Image (cartoon, rainbow over all chains, first blue to last red; front, side):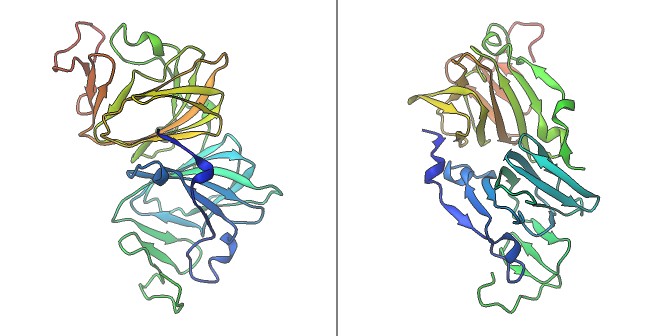
Length: 156
Length: 156
């Protein structure tokens, strides 16, 4: 049956950034629905963002499109041009390679829930806007923008 | 601003199938959110399915993964193995090339609303399960399974 039993999909809390960049996202919970359903062309995550948490560090992708649809609560989308509140029923798209980083912060007092969809390209590079960090899909490591690794045993 | 103003996104009613295959889907309304947001790696549609309507003819894709998330109401998912009701908050994935066709029928008395996501592959072939119809992405035409066109002036 192609129906995905969401309650049975593993929940991943936090992010794999080297500290202290992981701290703002530490309570983010992500479920990989698409992977659970056996599809591979794109990822679909169901993400719960508690009050105060960030969706990610602000970033843009070189080779991957992204899309988010808010299901519950509200988040504040931040990019070069300023801020936009996205409420339940709102959506946004982030075309690849714009150089305009984005992320979402939950400034409300209730958990926000959203779906995020992203294409998958082996050549993709994630470039952070506000901090000295980038990541290439080819190895999945978070490194300085000059390519040097972070001096952190757990970094990858 | 990457926020998509959903009310401003064009609404497409019905489907492009040759008659009479278009009839069960005649009141389906689809908005192409991803296209409106300028992304191209995958399509994201917001679809409203009134009571009695079908999402599509039952089909499977050779080269494209699909994913649906129900936002409002309920639909009955039909595939080779039987039927599954999907309610608001439920989701399903349809990996490429299974040969197990799927579609959804709204057997309730209220309009169902769902998001559908699909990858885009030029080599994709859509193969219908219950009728003599297929379509190739390379030309977008709906034809008999032997490749012969339907004798219908509006068919494409």
